[in-house]
Amino acid sequence: MIVNNSLDEVKKRESAFRIIKKILEEKGRDSLFDVTGLSGGFIASKKELELLETYVGPAVFEDEIQIVGKEHLGGEKVLPVNRTSAGILATVLALVGEGSHVAHFLADYPGHPSIPRSCALAGASYEEFIDINEFAIPDNTSLVVITGSTMDLQVIDEDLFTQVISRAHEKDIPVLVDDASGARLRTAVFNQKRATDLGADLVVTSTDKLMPGPRGGLMAGRAELIDEIKIKVNQFGLEAQPPLIMAMINGIKAYTPEVLRKSVSRKEEFYGLISKKYEMFEKTPNGIKVQEANLANQLKVLNIETELSEKDCCFLWSMVLLKEEGIITIPAVGMPGASDTIRFDLSTKDVIDMDLDVLQDKIDNSFDVFLDLVQKVEMAEKLIFFDE
Ligand SMILES: *Cc1c(COP(=O)(O)O)cnc(C)c1O
Image (tube, rainbow, N blue to C red; front, side):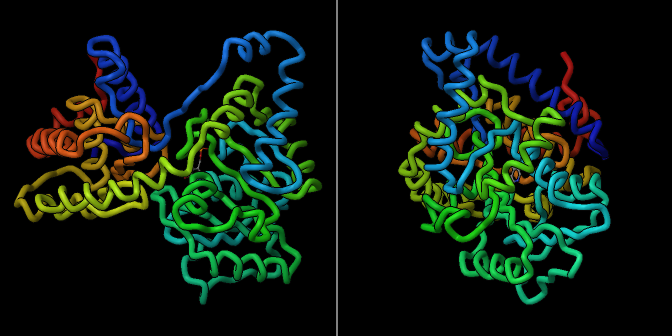
């Protein structure tokens, strides 16, 4: 095993950044292809950047994010935070008492790690459900969480969404929706309503998922709850700073659901192409992916033996994709605990117009190198903890 714990994941991430920097310096930005769906855009005009230096700017942006954010997410009040995880933590700190319970409903396991971690910090018990017939809200429940679209972009059924909300509200329990990517994916591609329009009390989205914004979290919902959460946000330094808020506003304004929809039809074509050669790919709403078990299975089909764990195989291929082809996927650059699924999001600006044959060649080449490296553990380890 090469990547065994959070520290290894941090080191792996640092090594991915070294590779990205090397490619940038040697070949330029055009040789990098970010298909994570998290592109961290930072749109800003010169005039806006100048505003940041005065006391006037923050006042302007705080006011504007209320307007732009409410249009995007609905709700009575908006709260910009440092990350989606920060919004989740602040909500749990504000609403979940020690010894209480949090019930989470989602389309597929697992929920984002920040949710169980926040509950553990608050001293609350926590349970995840993917089957509505098993979904339980014990009497000591303080918060119900719904994930709109999981880290692997599994989208919840809208009927189940409203059922969970009614069951929580029957017991007067507030509902937080983790709509990190769902706020756009559900609405643009699945024609679902915004979480607040479905009755959710609170929603949080990630402003760099499937939109040209910066890594940040945007919350919206009932004003009285947002105010309670805002206190925790300020007490623990979880709020978004003015430059982040400015870029969030511009990212939301620049977001177009059409780009997301275009990637849906390209996905069908690409899946058809690539599945002629491999068994491991599956479709996502806006691209394709390879899950841990399917990658392991593909190795078996090819009669390739390896001492690496299934997770290590994901990290390794992701690093090869980066080093050999400049393709950036989550397992290489993700935070500790992020999904190890290798996902190719076709809606990102680096590949939205790329010839699909060219993209397939890149994937083929990287896979050949990967097949060689899975049999050479020492070299694989060197690449994962790349230092040059
Ligand atoms: C990405 C994601 C998060 C966390 O976003 P961060 O910006 O990393 O805090 C939470 N929940 C889901 C479902 C996500 O996909």
